[in-house]
Amino acid sequence: MKLSVQGVSFCYRSEDVVNDVSFDATEGQIVGILGPNGSGKTTLLKCLNRVLSPKKGTVFIGGVDNRERTRKQIARQIGVVPQSANSSFPFTALDIVMMGRNPELERFEREKESDLQIVSNAMKMTNTSFLADRPMDQLSGGERQRVIIARALAQRPQIMLLDEPTLHLDVNHQIEILDLISRLAREERMLVIIVTHDLSLAARYCDRIILMRKGRIVSAGDVTQALTRENMANVFSIDATIYYDERIGTHNVAVIGAIREGRE
Amino acid sequence: MATVDVASLQKKKYSRWGAIIGGLAIALFLSIVVCIGIGSVSISVERIIEVFLGGGTRGERQIIMNIRLPRILLGALVGAALAVAGAAMQGVFRNPMASPYVLGISSGASFGAALAMIIGISWLPGKFSIASMAFIFCFLTLFLVYSIARTKGGYVPVETLLLAGIAVGAFFNALVSLMQYFAGENLAGIIFWMMGGLSSTKWDDLLVILPMIILGTSVIWALSRDLNTMMVGEEHALHLGLNVNNIRVIILLAASLVTAAAVSVSGIIGFVGLVVPHVIRLLVGPDHRILIPASMLGGAIFMVWMDTLARMVIAPAELPVGIITALLGAPFFIYLIISRRRKMGW
Image (tube, rainbow over all chains, first blue to last red):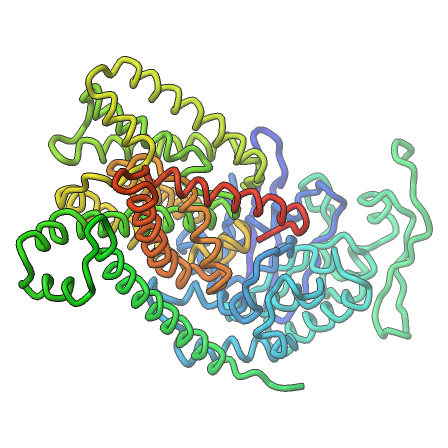
């Protein structure tokens, strides 16, 4: 499934948050959208599944303009793992994952055998089956995040969007979640788009990087093409280098120091 | 690690729901039959059944069919309505403190009803005049409170919601008092209605509010899956393809309709919409597909007993049932505030 973003802009009131963004991506890839706070990453993500309607530009999924689909139809194509995983309600993990089938169900329709099968598989893939009858408010942050990922998987999406999936997690859970996501991208041939500001994790897990600053794309390409020393200085105001780390068999970023702003 | 069978968990859940609904329905039926027998003239269950089958003395028929039965059924309807409205509002606002009374919605509805009763203004003629005005003002009040309390992210903090409810409710209460002040000869009736009572119920009242309650409750129940998703978070619901804004307005309209129906016949009866969904949620969990119908039955049972209490406490005179629900409900509300202080959340 090909995703094509063409000239998308979005503004809150009169302030441009996303400005003329274009990129293409295809299945099996993990694309990282990186940028500092306020660079418009999350807004761009919400434009992709029309939770926000772009003021200009078009998003095509599999060659079809998003505006020609209903919100429910889009939810069958795109699963989202939002940033907020706070939950102080006693829905069980199974209840939550089952919600992923909502876009497919008619108003009074009960879940069919096939829906239960899909949910069961999603929970197996994310290793959450054993949590099925536990209330969400008793789970750890990492467990909860995995349940939300299972819910997105239960939508049977071809594209999965994740907004800062590791933000509130301990380091061991960060790695666990991203290992899971990259395995899913390969095995399920999904297109995965991750919004993050964690450079090391992006360098390690992403196939392609889109660097954003003030609503615009600064650089896009392979990890080594996008995360150059110059770009990272420009976007994040840090002195950092990317290198191949043979212990993890992929790239990593070493942050050497901060560059004081206002000095070029 | 034990593998959990999703299908059997799901099946277990549905059969549990069936048992809960069945149990509550039986409890409601028994409550109605028992409460028909209780009163200044007590009537045994056998006699009640006999009257239902077309027998009994004229006196018994008069008491049961024209006085107690309509009143008890109206009480059940009002209780069901307030409980469903409360459950729906708690879901929409993602806030366990919401209810028609606490948010001042009942006051708004009573203002609309009073306009129709005292001044005779309405947009529908005949027996729907009072209820229709109650509905309009109910929805306006609900929207006003919601607009005041809502923050940018769509989140509705408890504090602002309650404060907005207090302020708006006080405003409408003052308007109603103002009208009462100028009401003249109608005064006694209005005051008794305002205190929340079910006395002198006629079958006609039932016919007016029954369609409103059936319509409103069906709409809310039909949207219960969406309510579940919205409770997880507005953003989550959007990503699952829900049109959150539309659904929220529809549910609030339906909740207004149901509240207005209750207020137009029985005035302001507080705390039913707060207490009942809470207790039911402890029993059945947070899923609105079961919470809505179970609250409906629970509210009906609660109200039938409260009204019977109201008839009996100072017999042969009777209390407005609103006084009793407030006496029981207010301490429960305080308990909620205290327990919330310890543990944020539901």
